[in-house]
Length: 273
Image 1 (cartoon, rainbow, N blue to C red):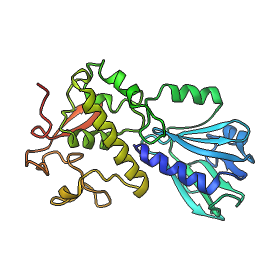
Image 2 (cartoon, rainbow, N blue to C red; image 1 turned 30 degrees about the vertical axis):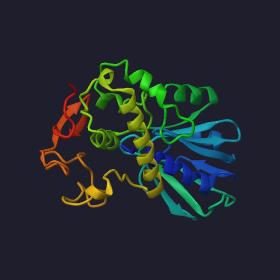
Image 3 (cartoon, one colour; image 1 turned 60 degrees about the horizontal axis):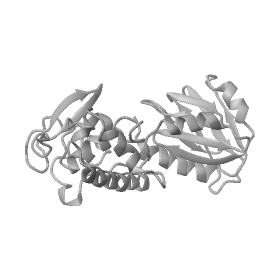
Image 4 (cartoon, rainbow, N blue to C red; image 1 turned 180 degrees about the vertical axis):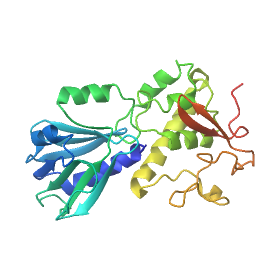
């Protein structure tokens, strides 16, 4: 599932390519036909991201909400676009008046693609935790949930009501970078530890937005065994079960926590106490 930096990159891209001009919106697949008709021919005022949610704001006050989920993806193409390929939930292209005209985009396979009103957007954002990539996000909102919870910090970081935009990669790598066991209860985390983690998370996710991929291994550690996939940067522990820790050589461990794969180094991230 795409993590928050991917949605923020998409929002910036759509802002450049479509915002400020009239856009045409359709649903070749048909599942979003009624929603597309409600915004087709309107001006796209702005695109923004909140955590893993993408929002297209129109001059009518309507908002198209997209959650990519596990399989959703936007496929951009220069104009004129060809015939839709596959199950295209939403097709969008502009009138050429945006800052970077000449493109359209097809959305395939999202978990959600729907029209929201302002109260529905407010309800969505109110139930999300602070987003490290949004200006003014308050890490104390997350801390208030974390330090009162007995749930493992590895689960709390993945809870979008606690922190918006963190997924499995950032979760695993952030905890490793700070030497914190993913099994440690939130109540056992200190305020100073959380402050350091939040600052690091902001920095890591900003790099992700800038370069379009997660860069989580410090330069001095960026050597040895290659990445888990040819097109991915190296990680410390994510998807490296059974391999040697890049720092201490201990075998990287794996388990399932609340339905998601979890990776950590038992030596570098010892249990609290």
